[in-house]
Length: 270
Image 1 (tube, rainbow, N blue to C red):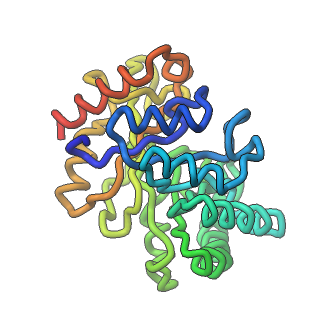
Image 2 (tube, rainbow, N blue to C red):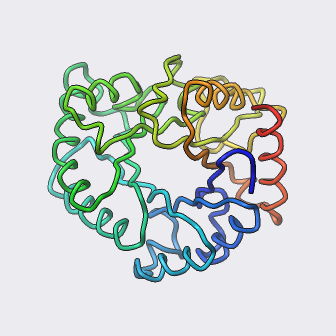
């Protein structure tokens, strides 16, 4: 096993069917994985029963740490409630420990007062659903300027004020943390870290988007190693999950070699 508690998000190799993705994680010495509900041709979208996903993970000795994700979670309505119930049930039945919660990211719901109220409405509605299933809600603020929840402080304040720390945690995404420009780390409330790097020297921070997110190496502009070191020094000991979105990463013929190299670089730097 690796020295750091790495995990693997299916976005690291989205072209692999679930069984091969699980095998990749095991081959890398990684014991934790995140599955997704936005990848065509594989579980969850292809209708694979949760029990099959659970059995496949158990066969490789893997822990499913999350399903990624309930989108637009802070725009609470009947459609969101239905989607949440389905995903929470699937998470429970496949053995996943958490559900990632992604906020509205289209420029709407950003007004001061409105966004805080929307967040609290969603947290209040989700809490009994998550608690009954024994699933943690992982709130993931996004650093994009158009996002309705870009501040981890706002998320932490809402969770704390509502007394919901037993049900909700934050996702520290190294990409979004850098974009948000918010220095606080909230290690005690962090339940998951997503890691990806940006090596393109031409793109400005304001223009960084998901396709720029590559595996972390020596050209990383986001200081992943520094972020991870600071989180761990502050007491975070949870998973560090690879989540690159760049098409050239997804097209790799040998993702294992690239991931192994990135793991080694991060371990040396942390």
